[in-house]
Length: 114
Image (tube, rainbow, N blue to C red):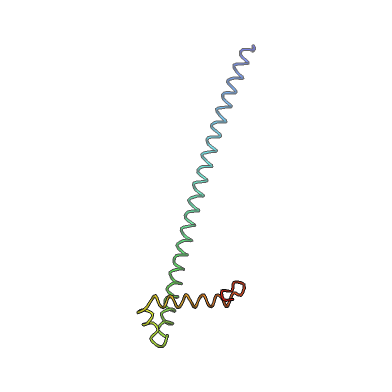
């Protein structure tokens, strides 16, 4: 072979290698993209499953809490429930003041009353 034929052969080989590398890279990128989409779908499914489980647990716990709170409210003496329903802002104000007083007494590092 002469020099020009060798140069052409090298150019053809380089072009073929470049084409093969591009094809291989494209296939690998497509495979990685498919893997990422698959993992994303699996993660979403897992997240939805956990969210459903948590939602069901929260609903069950809230129902238990509401039942227990209703039992406690029914056992309050002196018509306090009726007075609270009749004067809700007074009840909220009393609860707020009681919370501030208890907070001041139980947290000595932040004493309100000095």
